[in-house]
Amino acid sequence: MKYNIAIDGPAGAGKSTIAKKLAADLGYIYVDTGAMYRAMAYYFIQNKIAADNEKAVAEACADVDITIQYKDGEQQVLLNGENVNGVIRNEEVGNMASATSVYPVVRTKLVDLQRQLAQKENVIMDGRDIGTVVLPDANVKIYLTAGSRVRAERRYKELQAKGVHCDLDEIEKDIIDRDYRDMHRETSPLKQADDAVCLDSSNLDIDGVVSEMKKIIQSKA
Ligand code: C5P
Image (cartoon, rainbow, N blue to C red; front, side, top):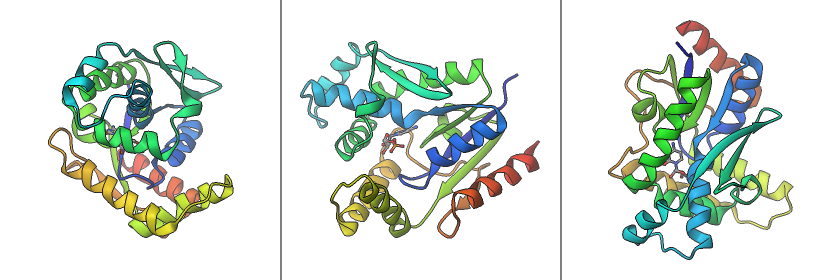
């Protein structure tokens, strides 16, 4: 039996940073499911498929093959054999991922892959529907959240550090829009699983969140 930890929550709550750190500390495999939706989205953008054209998205899904590899402990997403890790971390791809992850045809493909990974290894998997849909029997479920302004400020600092010009209010609006779409879609909306522990990271730094998470994991062992 594999030990699985599910972390869900809204955009910018710090899930991937925290999950990556936890996985390294605990010797687990980190599975970033958002990156898989982003890789699909990247394909749709490259092939000029409109996010609101469900039929075209469904047809395109048949041509997409997503596989996961690990290099130096880092998840690599291969889109039809090509490593796309370097091109999926931007707002355009994130917004396309949010718009196209509403379609069941997109989700089914990726949920199957996510479950296969969790069957093979002890994983810390993060996303929006891990505790509710992908791994309903996960040993530990955590819902990581933070206020939208705090999340926007974190993103703003990240972009500034990269030298990208940006506007805090616009980033917050984007985050609020994305939350709304993720929480109100028909298929697998973002919500806290009944048996998940909620952790608000608004007033915690990274080490503080990691330490709180370890306490939660220990309490479930
Ligand atoms: O977490 P990240 O920002 O990389 O995810 C991009 C988008 O992919 C999210 O806004 C969400 O719409 C979608 N997603 C999802 N289910 C997941 C992970 C991500 O619908 N398990």
